[in-house]
Length: 116
Image (tube, rainbow, N blue to C red):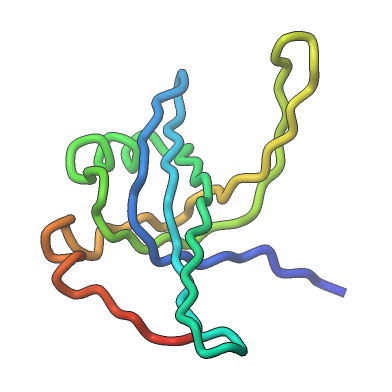
């Protein structure tokens, strides 16, 4: 049986980190809902997106800012590294598509409080 490893995100850029030949971008996604007591709830989840493509990384450095709304498609990838003698495991989205949807000012004006 064939499997599918595909993830789509629409969120806002939090931080851009340069590491050697790759770029890591934290993307915030939000969920809004009304709980069983009728109270509005909101949750923000942070996803690390890894950019391996050099041209795409250069474009992001020059065109994407903190707070911008972005659309990302990619696959889930796992990796590990050593820190203080311990192995740290990470799960990232390896980007195939990374596009700015709205600059920060437009993203705030067009925000949507739709329910989940």
